[in-house]
Image (cartoon, rainbow over all chains, first blue to last red; front, side, top):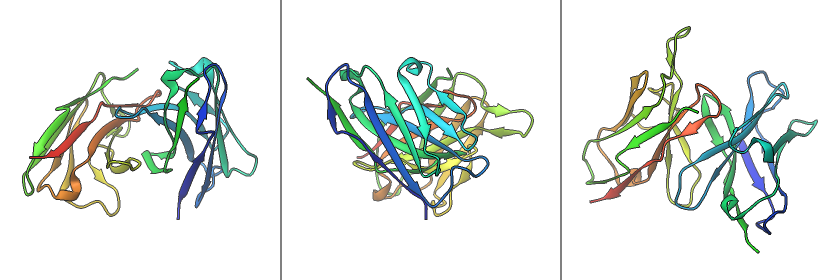
Length: 117
Length: 113
């Protein structure tokens, strides 16, 4: 059974760094072809893909945010991390991690992040 | 970036009605070497994560009812629900995985008439 779960701070102040963790089970990120992505969704709006990391450790970023994003994974291949630097109010959203194969076939429940002073 | 445009943005439907919604991409999603369209459809109900319904433009995921039909090729795609049920009221998104950055359409919201 594939599951993913995001965790994060809930709320943080503008200009801070947002750190998110995706903990998953039921698959191994070391399996060839496996990818885990981060996607976000502001309330009432559409989805925006942010970043991904694959089984080989290759990283992919949305150019619109690339300078602020860092994706990484742990050595046991059971967690993926995302850092977003210099957050502002526009980064307020629900953040999802999802397994990517042909599309995003498994999603976490999402973690709501509010940027507010 | 590949821009995904969905129409309509919302649609009022009655149970049992046939529904179609459109998704257009700014460039072809058809990969010539394998003749596959790198297009997925998702359903998102209020308060829930998106759920993958269809990949490769027309391949239903396991467990997805056969009333959900994906079609199209190149730059023009359609999601049809042959007979809408109450549980189908949701927002539907298309997404291209042809090239990064992977991008989503703005969504089509199905509402009750």
